[in-house]
Length: 137
Image (cartoon, rainbow, N blue to C red; front, side):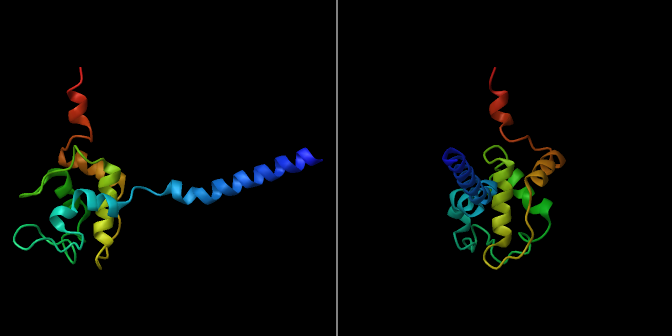
């Protein structure tokens, strides 16, 4: 009986550990961390930007508005802002946009990886990594 008890106990412990870890494993990328790495130098950690140079994202109706418009800026660039279509993948772009649309009292819904992928097609923007792939023979 002792081996059966030990096996059952081990199974229960493994199952409990996996269930406890599931939410962390299911979570996507950290939009705030990605924003801090890729965007905060210009738009500032506060989202207030630098007047006359980099627009504020905090309280921006553009940022909280149309999904395609705001995502299009990250995919194609705008004015002095570079495009990130070949440097940040769709999952991370969605995480950044979702963070920006919900940070600093902004209240807007999330964007998904699938939406970003569809917008690439609509806007005629190459899929992430396409430039690197085309340079390989």
